[in-house]
Image 1 (cartoon, rainbow, N blue to C red):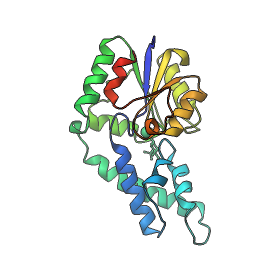
Image 2: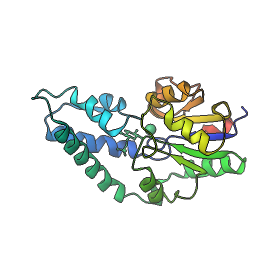
Image 3: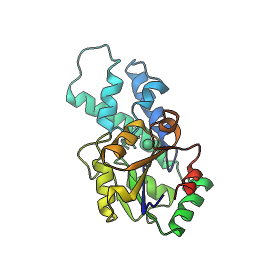
Image 4: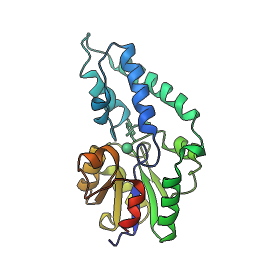
Length: 212
Ligand code: BG6
Ligand code: MG
């Protein structure tokens, strides 16, 4: 395939922060007596913080919550999540991801991030990747989260490429939908790969090297 750029989702693709998201939401849900499990969690992949909260609240059986209370719950989750992020280091970047990124860079591809997360700059710093990517498009520069294609279209713009020249890499079904909605081809790993959501459904991150 003749891709000139690759746009990577962050959580669940470059690093395993998806597990930290799950653990933090689980604590928040438990504190409110709301049922929450890993199947529901898969619906939160790629989805913004406040939209994720609304999905969890589908199971809430109490009185309607005010916007202020919802903000408080989202902040509770983010505080727990940030606590886990503080424990991350460059050791949380797997050899497979590091080697694959370097090999893709050596092939002359432009590499960008396309993540819904507002914590993206902090996570990249923890991983030692703050200066690695040619561009970062994240939850801080978008108004609509996946499955809307905005975050990927901005990433393509930032590296000066057309969607047709870029490959999107995702672990979320909503992210694969966002890629397709923007006119990108999509390679999936993890949950989205298992769901068959991509044009390429990979068994490992390293398999990306077979596509470019
Ligand atoms: C996405 C995650 O990358 O970022 C979602 O897959 C998360 O689970 C979203 O809700 C927003 O993240 P944050 O860090 O801004 O709360
Ligand atoms: Mg993800």
